[in-house]
Image: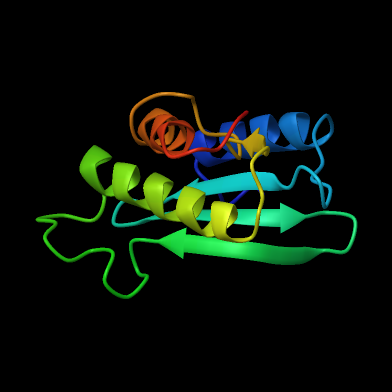
Length: 122
């Protein structure tokens, strides 16, 4: 970890602290979010079996169409709506939100609110 930037080390510490407290189950999977400078990713994970139940990102085919940039709030809203749609198709309505050490602000907040607006509860 010594080769990482201080910001990355701080995020990994937050990630570890949050993950100690939350786990996904088949009834309430974990909605994991990751963001990079260019893209944003969301997964529904069942931690008891270690299986990804659904995934959406700005790299998903058809999701980035019409976007000028895939690393902004507008893209996060589309990903949040897409992951909520996939969850509802699999009859998942309740999830545990895992912000993955990122601050609940900007793109992370936009994705979470879009998922809530499209039927997920957390």
